[in-house]
Image (cartoon, rainbow, N blue to C red):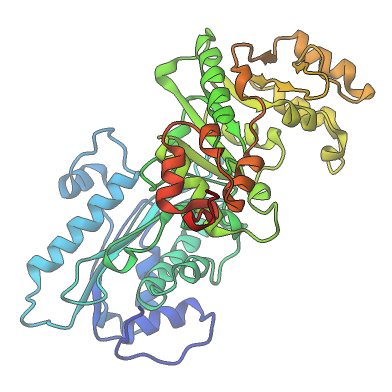
Length: 482
C-alpha cells in the first residue's frame, strides 16, 4: 500500500518535474543521499532548484574520478564502472552511511533513501550513444527493511547535454514514484516517462525487490516495458529475475527459438535439442560462449486480443522450470530480431523454426511496408552470419515429411529460396523424433481446458506435474474426466 506522507500538496495527475521534486522536499520524513557518476549531478540539481532541499538532501556527491570511486565503493571484478553491481554497491554503501551517521533516536520517523546512477553518455564520435544504471534504495516505514528499484536505460538522443537533462528528469520520476506510486508498480513504471518522450530514452530492464514489492513478479514488469513501448526486447532468467539483454548477449553465439510455448511441448524441446547439436557443431560456434534464447513475440501474446498476463506467466513458469532464458520482443519479422542481436554480437547466430514459420519468412505480404520489399528484408536477415535450422512437418494426408527439399513456396520466391538453401543458410533437422510430430501446443491447451486426459504424455518430463501443481492454463482437477 502507498504510505501517507507528511507535507503533501495536491498535485495534478502528471506533475511537472519541479512539482515532483518540491513535493518530496516538503515532506519532512523523506531524507537521503544522491550519488551520481558519469553525467553530472543532474537529478539532485532538480531538488536544489525546486526549493526546500535542505529537508531532503543529506548529501550529494559525484565520485567522478575512478580512483576515488574505487576508494569509496571498492573495485569491481570486471573493472567496469557502468554496471548493475556497481550501482548496487553505491546504493548499499550510501544507505549504510546514513544509518551509521544519523541517530534513529533523534530521527525516529525519517524514511531514509539512497539514489544513485552510474552512466556513460554519448562519446565524441557519436558512435556510442550511451547507457546507464539508475536505482533507489528506500524505506516506506522506519521499522521495515529497505526496498529497491533498479533499472537500465539506453539513451536515444545524440547530444550529451540533452542526455544529462533526460537523466535528471528520470531520476526525479523514479524517486517520486518510489514514495508515492509504490502501491501500483504498473503505474510507477509508466510514470518514468512523465515529462519525457520515448524518443529520448529506452528502459530495457527493471527489477523490484524488498518487502513492499514482495508480490511483484519481475517477469510481468518486463512484459510491461515491451507492452508500453519502453523497449523492443526484454529478457528474464530461470530464477524469474530480469536480465539485461546487452549483457547476456555481448559477443555471444546466439541460437533463438521462437514459439508460443502455450504450453511448451516435446516437439519444442526436440527442436531445441537437435538445433543446439547442429549449432554447436559449427566451426564458428563456441559452445562455451553461446546463449540460447526461447523467444515469444508480443503479437503472439496478443493472438487472442488483449494480453492475458496470467497466460503469459504460465508460459514463463514452464520455460523457467526447464532452466531456459526467455525473451519477449516486439519483433514480428525475424530480420528485426536478427538486427537486434547484431547490436551486441558479430558472432554466428542461428534460428530454429518449424516449416510453417519458414513459409512465412518467404511470404511477401509481411514486407510490403518496406521500400525494398522482401529483398531488403532478406538482405538484412542473411547479410549477418546466420543459419536457419528447420524442423520438419508431417503431412497427415500423404504421411510425407516436409523438409527444405520438398517445401513449397510461392512461385515468385522459388529462386530466392533456392539461393539461400544452396548457400548453406537453411539446414534440415534430420535427427528428429517421428513419434511426436503429431503434437501441437493448441491441441494440448484444448485438452487441458476441456479436462481431457492424455495431454501429459505430450509434454517434456516434469512439465505436466508443474501444470497440475500450479493450476496453469486453466487446469482444474474437477474438470478432468474419469
